[in-house]
Amino acid sequence: MDPYLASVLTNMTLIAFLAISAYLVLVVGEVSFGQQAFFGIGAYLTASVTVLADGHVIWALLTAVVGGAAGTLVLGLLTIRLSGLYFAISTLCFAELLRFSLLQTRFTQIIDGRKLGPDGPEGFSNIRWIFDNHFDATDFLLLSVTCLTVLLLLLFGLARSRLMLQARMVGNDPILAQSQGLNPTHYRLGFITLSGAVAGFGGGLFALFNTHIEPAMFGVMLGVHALTYSIIGGLGSSIGPLIGVVLDIGLLESIRQLAAYRMIVFGGLVALFLVFRPEGILSHRLVARLKRRWGRRHV
Amino acid sequence: MFSMQGICKSFGGIEVLSDISLTLQSGDRIGITGANGVGKSTLINIATGFLAPDHGWIQLNDLMLTNCPAWEFARAGIRRTFQSSRFLQTATLGEQLFLAGHAPEYRNRLADLLDHSNLQSSLHLFPDEISLPLLRKAEVVRGLATQPEILILDEPSAGLTADELHQFGTFLNQQLGRKTALVVVEHRLDFMAIVTDTVVEMKLNQGLQVRAD
Image (cartoon, rainbow over all chains, first blue to last red; front, side):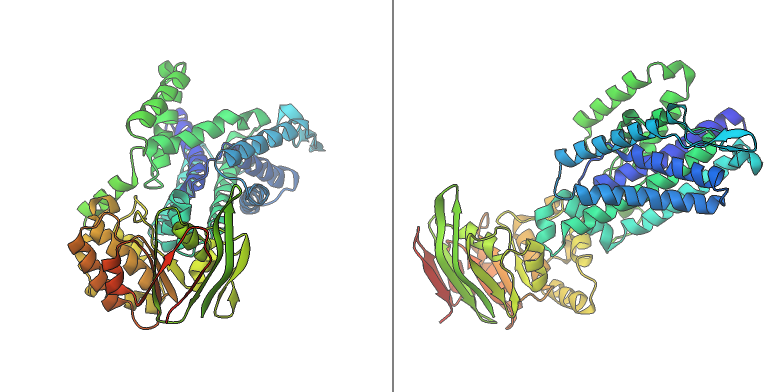
């Protein structure tokens, strides 16, 4: 496969993890502007484990998952009494706090004559896992698409479950949820933690793929974009955020003639969606209609 | 079984409930009526945990529920309906009823309730595609399928015609069972006559002792 195409597709796949993580937070009715921080945590942890500790990539990605989940859990526990706007602001603050901390983090070691490890604004270079294991662009695309597919299958299973319906109830109408005996806090914390795990895993793959990461890559705009993918794609299915990713990264960022106008076009698109189709392309209603048409009833 | 004693509640210095007591035994059917603004809704919200009382205590069997969150009241078996029937708007009625519980007792009771209702043909519809009388019924089905200790109905007559209300009352009477206690907050006395045994009237700023005779 053409390496440029493969890298565009890989990039879309990796951002899809971030988009799905933002989607999981939206499911329980919260808005996070900070998912990029957990993506970043995953990236830095994976880089550290593979490069500094010379650990296996499986351990590296597992560390990223646990790190992302732990980060969101801590944030969730600290902000559990906040909701709505205040939660959104606190995620934004947390993400920026983390980014500034990374800018100050220097922990470099000389290994085999190369300076390795996080080096403040210079970032973390020489993440050589794909070179050492002779992965080319197509191989890595296959790896990340496989991981994304597994995640989506898990989410499809979740979508048909009681748990997901209850989480949506918590997100849409907490009073109704409580009247049905559901503790909204448990669902919020659970889904927020899950979102951190997904973001961490995506960040881990992102670090392996880019071979160089730096704090500036995990800025607020990344999180804002991840959030808007669900607004465009819709909350009716975990495919929704992927549609947003395809539109933004696939069309706007990757087609060079359009790239310069990306922010204008994408911002306009989000505004149009909010006005004309606030539920996004794949709304719950559309998804249910499609299921009905295909004869698969939920009952 | 259920006991609320000495409940007081003020909003911004204005006392809405003063010394309200409510005692229910298994199978009691009590109607609470009263003019607008005497605190009927506040009473429901306190009895279901959506508001905490300023004074007084609430107990179900051996469980102290005072100051517990609403979801604990619901788990303990105190279920309610809302004046404007409340469902998740983005899921079908069937999903909401079938996925609301997974215990075999819940499934069996739900199947039984659905057999005796005319809801079967609406299960694949979204709440806003379903008529109000059916939604009211569905809300009761959702509550009764959990085999609650107490079912509290908040103005079930709102928006129903006399015929629809009568049908609703008949359905409720048939399906309530002996064990569940019923509290209806309502001003339609004809409806109260169908479903309740005792009706008490709340008056502004007057203490109230409610118990079935």
